[in-house]
Image (cartoon, rainbow over all chains, first blue to last red; front, side, top):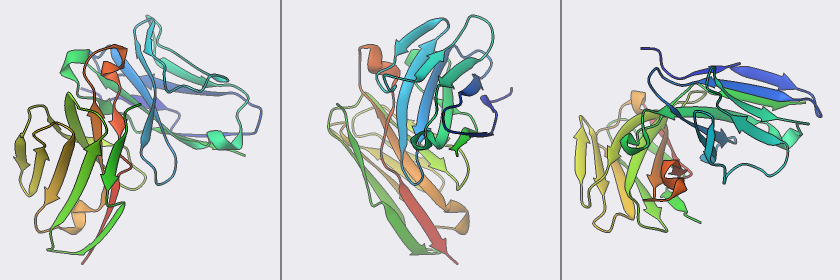
Length: 114
Length: 114
């Protein structure tokens, strides 16, 4: 059973470009969470999605950031017009159902903005 | 909003010594989870605690959840070099749309000297 998959593992963008991060949850999991981690810091919650629904986006910056989890295909975290401060590791986690609680993390995408 | 404080931020031990990290939440938690992250890696789920006063053991690791469900600890007996990494606690509050959201502590970076 494959774990949570994320791609790309490393992404380099210049200021002003767009970054698209993809996450495929574990098989059978329908809940996806995105977290951001700055160097030597903890993980900060960004957004919680179920298929075709955003459940909680309280951690998402108001501008330039968006997330989706379509009926078919992976969840996408999109960052428009990236700035240097967006450089971080972005982790996706999935869980089977909300009541189960345990979240399993993917390997992350390391975003570097030049 | 909910805050989870974790101490110490850094811990250096000699191999064979014990290690403890502590977590305190500003609000009562429905459950708490512990993760380990190796340098350059992703958070790996260790355990979940749900009940007030719960104690769970995994070989040399002992996890505790406080009676008030606002604090938790992880204790490692006789550390080994393979224990190196950052240990995070992550708490979840009950109810509402934020139920899926994990609030992470800042993590404790453990270094074990051979």
